[in-house]
Image (cartoon, rainbow, N blue to C red; front, side, top):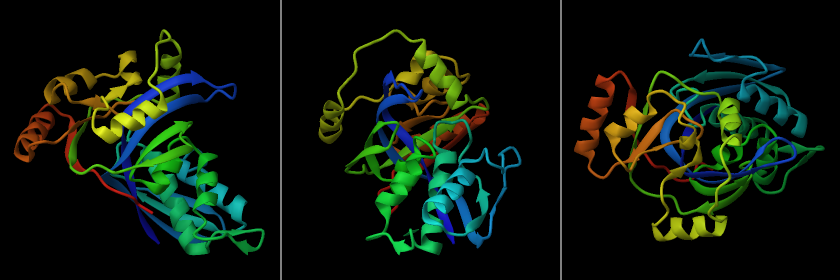
Length: 278
């Protein structure tokens, strides 16, 4: 069973507080893009992962491993042999690890069916999959379903939004930043006012939502400012960094920008905004 593991961008990302369990309370608009890893899953007695990128861990540290183990525990199924062909750069804020984990959950559901306590879950088992995904990581519930959504809490509370048409340039330097390190920097920022979730939805719907990412205020990721200088004021870092995206309004101009970015040694490409995955 082969699944595409689609990357995501954050059109809006704010952190409105820290919870007692140590996680951060988020308000974010996420959107799937066509950049994708290729995840192949075959049934197995246990869990075994291989990856085209030798720098990616293939043990319990890999989110795909955590998702496979969580599916086995929740539904009492067999395991999975997993191969990940990487195309989404790591430590980029593009949700590559989460997308891989979500793809594993979708694949295992297709292989085994969602079986809980000996009974097939009503319908397609999506609610059960989302619940399982939420226990494995903040972005995984969104990566499981894709499209566009307002995501709250740690990402598990999703309000579907109408996906956008068009494309974005995505660019990344060689450096990245770990998500835990990025959140520690967020904790040190002064408190500010926050847009309500209802206002975010309203402004997304009428096309007036500003591109915003609170993580840009930490200013610690090398190359981000240079990439933003090239792409112009309608560019934004996604997630906790370090990739930057910008909407494409003119394809020829965007292709010129990609050539400029690559000429300076950055990873860069043009990717479509995509709708629902499942």
